[in-house]
Image (tube, rainbow, N blue to C red; front, side, top):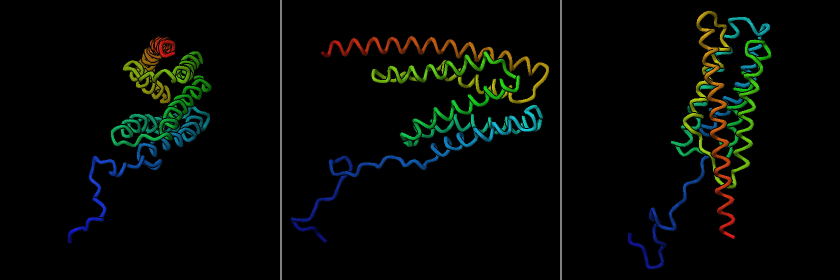
Length: 212
């Protein structure tokens, strides 16, 4: 049946009347992985300190929970970007979950005497400092994660995971060397990010002066 002169025209993709895709809801796979990582933080801490904190069986289970948390960290952000599932919740919760699981592992291992406190302090000071610095320059732009930063995160995760396990012999030596590399990457990438932040702020302030 044909439409009369007064009948509304059908909407076509690409026209102004086309439906706009609704933003992704909070309950998506990427955010669920992030929430799982947050929930694993207290579970990991309890397992790490179970039976005095030095029982090999409990430490192995603690390592398993830490490994699951690290694996979710690899996938949630990638899924969010590829599937168009980026949400405000994810932007806030993802870095919080990352720092919570890594911070709890570092502090827990230092409390148990398995990891020197200076290592924990250097890594945590870097993470907190870089986060605050990103907010300091956010009005001028965003500092993207560098390859060095991603390598630092991977190296830290593997090294900390090895410290959670009750390793001896050459494996214990290997994890100490790997942690040393992680600390060097931690400091090196921090200096690089500071340089980027100062340059970004300087260029942003110059543009503001020119725009006046």
